[in-house]
Length: 194
Length: 205
Image 1 (cartoon, one colour):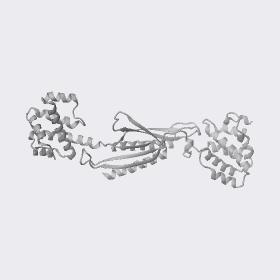
Image 2: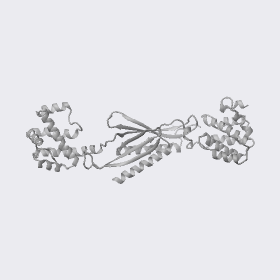
Image 3: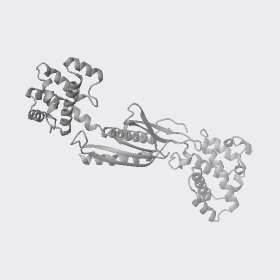
Image 4: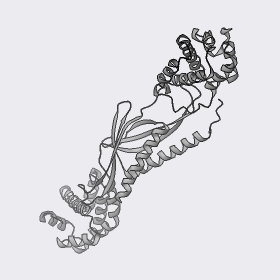
């Protein structure tokens, strides 16, 4: 599973051999797992550097290696025990492997769920709002009693996380019935999948 | 006397003033047929077929027919537009126009009858509206594997809506949001049914 180069792993060893660092490493791992794109911000990196007394490029190497191991674990969706076994196979010390295994066991379900639900599409439906109106008259007729609904679909684009694009759609009773039938068909499809 | 017709505010238009004269020669059947055809016309629906049938039946002279239809159309269109017109007032107006009594009952019921269901109004007469869905397409996908997960197996829904104002919206719907959308749509439908079955607002007609 791991095609990590020996150099990377050797550096990992040299800098993590001391016992006092075990606790910090589990902390590091937790942070790696829970962060997303860029693991640590600039300030956090500086703090880590001083806390672990490592140089900048060593810290980068460490973080990258940890991220890589975790990404592989996510990709293959392995169990905690399996992860420990694999790590020991590439000669990581057993207590370090144990740290990996524990962190993975606790954080895995959430991380997997979050990644699984992350779909990418140009626009995503984020908000559903609606309003039910009763039309009483228009310029051509009075004494009407016609209900109609306005649906507000808030669409969020991938790159613009702040603003929602609003789409307003109006439905008469019959239109809404047709739309509802379509929803039911989609639901039947979803049910047949599981 | 024709000046006192309140439906028109001031003087009634010429075709309405002459309406009584042309209605005199009609029998009640023809009148009710004409009334239903004119009502459809006022709502913007197609009534050419029914009018053609009446004129070809030969029961009424062409001249009379044309004037009667024009007068009825102007009268009914104006009466249906006024929100606070009461039936008694309208009947008085018809008397002022010298329409015969039995016809007054027919014309009056055409305006005030059980026509509350306005489903039949053509789209041009409904007034301005927001965009409606012209075309709705969807598909259900299952993501088998992604760059982050080798076994994802996550369903997702892609929807494409073409609206009547020309915009095309294509967007993805997460399953959770889809459930929310479905729930809201059925909630609105339930509310609409409630409104139509009983008057939630006490609207004075």
